[in-house]
Image (cartoon, rainbow over all chains, first blue to last red; front, top):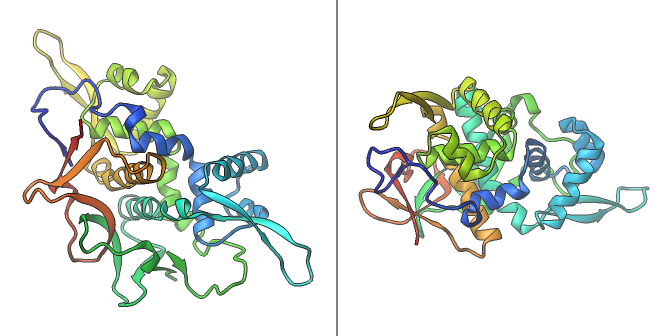
Length: 157
Length: 157
């Protein structure tokens, strides 16, 4: 990625002000590591408060506050569920806005695997129909893009 | 994106433990909103401490600490520069590890633009050679992927 029209001089300001930047807006919601880890849980289908807590070791007060914020931002939604012989409880799942964060989460995983874990990945990503292996990359708009809903994520063990 | 072999039951744990998860490892470094905003600055070629501070409104102590951490993690590197008539100073620029975070940053921008800014984007992403408009998406491994270095990012105004 390179900038256009900058030449070799030192750039003094980002060409896009914070208020108009999609990334800066996104980061208002995805404000810390815990928030992305909660989204990771939701992607894997973990929906209960206690299960999230066990998985990521997040303090209660932080988890409560982040879930509230993600729900207000319409990234997560509360959802009733009932296990056999138990009363109805509430858990959290991704909204469609939350689901579309999948690409960012996968890009982050890919970077972590490639740059910090010597290329070893704990998951594999495949096209559900063709079985082809997938990755996150740049694509020409309107062509060759595979929707997230066509991808299957499988733990590799 | 969906999980395999989970059925309709409630998932109690993420299938990938934190220690083996590329995203969790990545988030050890990219631990907060400020960190990603600093990386955004570096992408746009802003390399000076004071310029970053002006752009993103980050407190000095936080900026100093985050720059140190990003340098230790080999995402940024210190680099001497000299402007006409001035002494040599040091700024920061992305290492190759840092540059490969471009995909994550672009995925985040795309999500922010599409989900939080009604689809309006302050930047356009084009293939340097063909001029084709690009976006971040899922691609079949080994095919149709366009390297980040082939992309040109242009502010739209």
